[in-house]
Length: 217
Length: 147
Image (cartoon, rainbow over all chains, first blue to last red; front, top):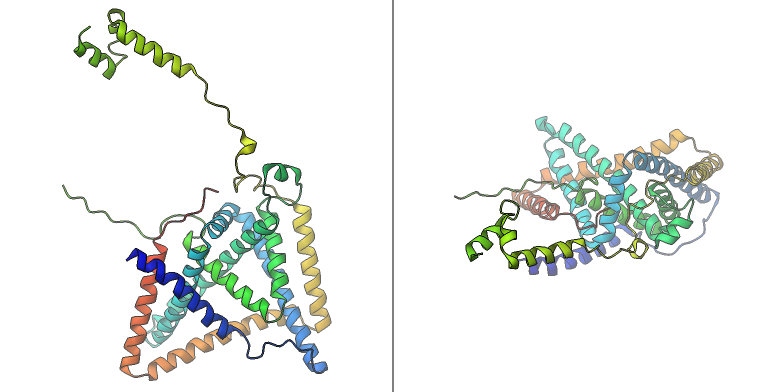
């Protein structure tokens, strides 16, 4: 069973990645310059909205790291230690959120659907926010993290959780501004983040479920 | 000096300390152990150990953080100004994407209601399988090194 899962999981991930890429990618891959003033204005507005959202992400990331830096670091370490598991968990969790949202939406006429849908939405948004901040930390550490203790001691600015998160936001934000590639990379980062947040239980590294053991005497 | 007395001493050396005066063999064992316990452990070169994730993590380089945040906010404000957008418009656009997602879920729910019983059962089975897989993946304990 375990061996079958090991074979089945990578295949599922590759298939799901291809399907996600096919859905996410726009029909035409060619990047073309804007045709007129109206299209140029629309592009500028789009870039402005993305930049404004990145600024919001920066403030959220700094605040969250100040509040719970250790948890963010735990999640970041977990993501780098078992990336494939986090990605698989993220894909499954996103699918589960979508299917559960449809089920709760189906239950709206029976009065229980709306509060459940609201709770699911809040949980999903919080998971994504926390997870993406962990992704920022992981990217910052990969790009600018100290490799040796000597390097760490020599640095005055590029050290600490806060610096890593800020560097991560800048790197991922710069990629986000690239047309076509940006949204896809951001989407993958979100999937990674959701997987990491759930895998580490928001950095607390506690089990989600209690283990029951039969005591036979 | 019988084997029984030696055994009793080895089981509880403190309670049977008097046995050492009468047994040369146990005295030799005790002296050897005392010599070994005096040996200092090998010194560890801390710098040769790999860097732990928590080392230097509490450092807060405020000039870097505030500087980069200020630059990002300034660029965003400048772009919004150039595009003629207000912060309210940005919030509206992010709400629009949420609304689009809500619309997608509503359409899927309407399709599910209109679908035949077989499709509804198939959806239920898919829902159960995906959530079972989620639970299986959630049961795995984190593997990351201690941070």
